Amino acid sequence: MLIAGAELLVRAAIRLAARLHMRPLIIGLSIVAFSSSAPQMAISLQATLAGNTDIAVGSVIGSSIFNILVTLGLSALIIPLRVSRQLVRLDIPLMIGASLLVFVLAYNEHLTPTDGLILLAALALYLGLLLRQSRHSQRLHPPGPASPRIWAPRISSLLMVLLGLSLLVFAGHLLLGAAVTVADDLGLSERVMGLTVIAVSTSLPQLATSLLAALRGQREIAVGNIIGSNLFNLLGVLGFTALVAPSPLSVSPNALDFDLPVMLGVAVLCLPVFYSGYRVTRAEGLLFLGLYLAYGLHVVSFTTGMPLAGKLEHLMLFFILPALVAFLLFSSLRAWRRQHKKEAP
Image (cartoon, rainbow, N blue to C red; front, top):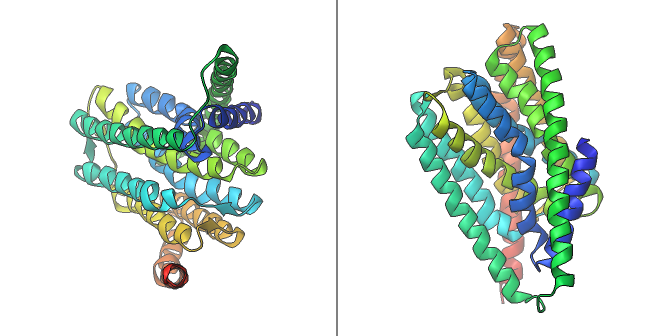
């Protein structure tokens, strides 16, 4: 069902982009991203109303990390992804800003209804920017005169979006139920369940959609879906959940000390990777997957009290992260010099 829903969603997005004379990137950042994030909204609301706020918050944090490191990494392994300049100049900085905003608002270990309104207001500003960009795209490529023959394919594309979304939501619900049962049997905490099992389950629609888009050669949809989903999860899902929650959402100290900084660091990591050549190579995809493996091992080993947690933390802090920062600085400097030479008269 995930594969079928993703196929319908990608096909409908391509048709809508052509019919509405919009770039596939805008469709990926908006319709595809928000549709594939619907399971995350449903799960977070259900968890909040049931009093499982650690699951509601942890699943959003874990999903944001999973989307970039795993979904983007696997998509790049299939085919190197071209990155639009708009993503580097606008959408990636906005995703970093959204991650930082959530970090700041959650610093007192709570997300209040006022915080939810702030996040939703930021989402409304982002949607306004997307609407402005879509109108600019339509001015560059004005559509022809409207007629029933033109509107009919648009309606059928919207029906395909709804059908694909329904399949994604239902399949995600089935996978979530199975994942929670397995996690309960293993004795995992709500925070770890939210960060790992539930985050992966709610991210499967994004994973299926981006992988299928990459296989079909729709690279802008593959990348735009990931960035747009993260923005919607952080601003829309967390914002609406905090707004309607019976009490302020609690944020665990462990999430503040480790998970939120990792989420912010992963968002920042996208900027130099995307900027160096405006593409994500297979080697960078492998790097993302390796980082997620290290993160997952650390979360599980720390929670279960295994001595592996301390060794992983020491390895990441003193060896892997310094080498990664040096490599990214070198790549960004080389890309800046190359572009500066091209722009020079």
